[in-house]
Length: 331
Image (cartoon, rainbow, N blue to C red; front, side, top):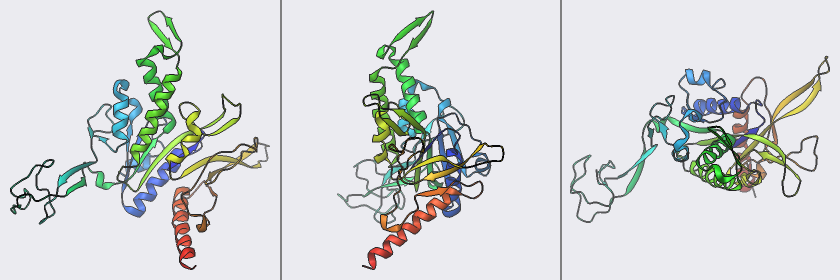
């Protein structure tokens, strides 16, 4: 899932709501990889309760950031989440299963062992042991892994590429300080790796993976048309990234009314389908839901001052699937 919107619109709050919902319904915790410098204010009550674990990856040494991001987007987690450059631990390990006790035989790779290391039963010659996987390093307690955010990951990659290869674009020498501009190759590399990192997260063994991103309102450099969507390194990915996600929710502010002092009141809303901002009707923001069409999923959900908008979303999604199922079997 992707949540995107302007800075300060409430993406972190919605992420915290999702974490609370996962804990309430599944009894599982959330791990958040923070890269946008937004802090932990929205998560603090959940962190204090042990429901959310937070890792500020933007505070890590960037000399190996490509490698680090590759691991964390596969579910690896620091031994000490609040200590930068801490050892990363895997979420799973593989083993060869005993046909008798279903435990770990101790066999490594395709090697043959005479007896099971767990129960001691003798294993016949040539017996092929099934390869299994199990969750480790407390990953069995996790139901949601979140990344804040997609825009910040892209900027981190661009900054590192600029340091590694300052010749990619314009370079200015200011005393001992080198000022380097980004080149086209930098953007291409960052886009390729960001695509791979999002693909990595599809294999994390949890109920939900959630990304956040900032909103882009810009112009296409080639055609001069407005571009609306998630802000990524280079405008090329703004439209291309939508298929990466099962659900794309745009969080936006809708003018509702004017107060007694004439100040416009903005009502924050979760948009679950494409919509058009009032100022540019021909061009709109992308959004989509995984709900089947027959389920009659609502296209908007109010953010609300109280309550849990994400809980409402998940409940509506479940209801939509049930309605669609009933419709299909009634034919």
